[in-house]
Length: 173
Image 1: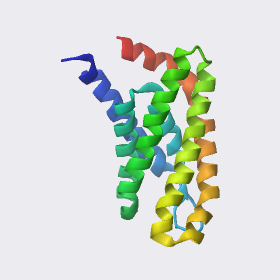
Image 2: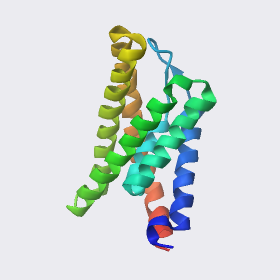
Image 3: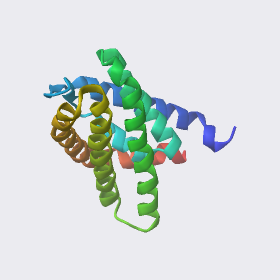
Image 4: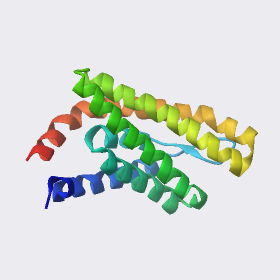
């Protein structure tokens, strides 16, 4: 078996998917317009990108986040969430890898991944919600998605130093 499909990488990806689902469902602050909610799950989506390769990050973040929608009764959002959260983690993984290769401070790289989350989540959901609810409701969801992204940036920045050493050791072992 190649390193690309190693058991520990699969287990770590599944762990991140489960964490994304639980973090998304654990705290829900309702938002106006679309009936959505603000949650801390974006922090885990960002961390998927920081700690996993792009494909694993896409799948872990996408599956975990859309499972929260499925289990929470937000059926129409399942495919939308899968794609948006997956793209956030995929993009974050690419950007984080490039920034680290250039010698950038890892904390700044994590913050950069948080900015990616804010842009893709607010923009992605707004675009999809135009077709679901109309322009007014879609625009009404943007501020809450920005707040969610900012909270994800803050939480992931706080969790990164706690997780960095154990996960780095686990991936090398």
